Length: 510
Image 1 (cartoon, rainbow, N blue to C red):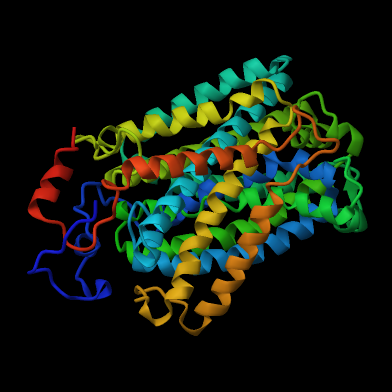
Image 2 (cartoon, helix red, strand yellow; image 1 turned 90 degrees about the vertical axis):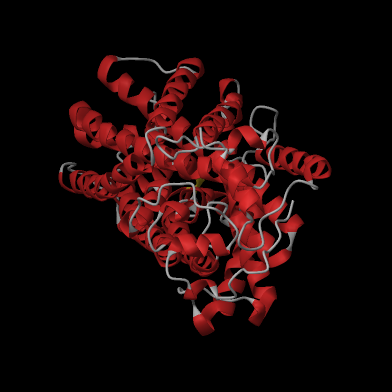
C-alpha cells in the first residue's frame, strides 16, 4: 500500500537534509532502529560477511577439483575486479537510498513496485542462502577440528547438529542489539586480517617443501567429469564469486549507521577491496603449502584446508589455526544474520512477506527486530536440509546464495542506468564513471547468474545436481503467487509518512 505525501512535506533534496533521521523520514520511514553504528562498524559488517576465512576456506576443496590452482588464483583476481565494479555502482545507489530494505527499496523507487517486489525476494533468498552456507561451512570446519583434536568422525547428521547449534548462537547474539553486533564486527576485521597473516606466515616458514610458482599459477585440474576446460574454469569461479557476496550488509544496516548516506557506500567499496587483497594472499599461501594434492582432495577430515595445515604444520599447528578459522567463520555468520534480519524487517515493514505484522516487530529494550532474527535462522536451517543426504549439497547452497543475491545487486544498478538524469545521486557518487562502471557490473552479473545455474558435476545425478536453480524457481514462483495476494497491501512509502502511519509503525515495538 503506497503511502501518500502530506501537503506540507518539505521539498528538499535528500542530501540537503541536516541529518540521517530527517533523510530517512524524507524517504518515507519513521526511525525505529537504534543508530549506534559508526563508519568503521558499517565497513566491518560487510567485511565480516565477505569473510575470506569463510568463503575461501570452505570452498577451497571445490576449487581444487574445478580448475585447480590456476583457476582459483587467476579467477580470484578477475572476479574481484568485476565485483569491485558491482560494489562501486551499488554504493552510488545506496548513498541515494540508505534504508534497511536496501536493494528492493532502490528498485522500487527507480523502477516501480514489481521491480522492488522481485528484487526483494531474490535478495532475501541470497541472504538466507548465505547464512546457511556460512554456518554450515563453520560446522564442517568444527567437525574437522574435533577430528584432529579428539578423533571425532564427522557424519552428515552430526555436522547438521553442529550447524543448528551455530545458528542458535548467532540468533542469541543478534538479540542483544546492534551495538554488540557492531563491536563483534570491529573485532572481526582485525581477527580476519591477523588470521590471514598468521596462517600464511606459518605456511611460508614452517614447511620444508613448497609448490613452485609455476604450479600455483598455471596448474589446471579437472575433477568435475566435464570434458570442456572452459566450462570447468567457469564453474570454478564459484569460489571467488561466493566469497565476494554479502557486501549489501552495509546498506541493510544503514538505518543503524551514523552518516549512513556516505558511510554505507564507503563501507561496501572498502570491504570489497580489502577482501580482494587478503583473499589472494590467503589462497596463494594455502596453495604453495600443498604437500600431497590427491591426499588433500580426499582428506579424512572432510576439509581440504585442514589437511594442508596438518601436512605442513603437524597436528598441533593445524588444530590451532583451524580454531582461528572457525572463530572467523562465526564472526561472519553472526554478521550475515544481522543483515538478513534487517532485510526481513524492512520487507515486512512494507507488507511483502506472509505474516508481515509479526516479522516487523521491534524490541523496545534493544530496538532489534527479534522475530526477523528467528525467521532468518529458521529459514537457513531449512535451506541446508539437503546436506543430510547429498554429498554435493553444500556447493548448491553456496550457489543459491550467488544466484539469489547477485541479480538483486544488478537490478537497482540497471534501473539507475535507465533512469539517467532522473536519478538524483546522494553525497557519494561516481560522477562521469557511473555509466561505464554500471554497465560493466550489470554484464558481469548476467554472466555469473547463468554460470551458477549450471550443473557442477558430470554425469548429473539426483545426488550431485545443482539444486540452486530449483531453489531459484521455487522462490520466483512463490513471489509471483504471493504478489497476487499481497499486491494491494505491499508498497514502499513515497515521502514523509502521515501521523497515522507513524503510529502504526510505533505499534510494532514490543
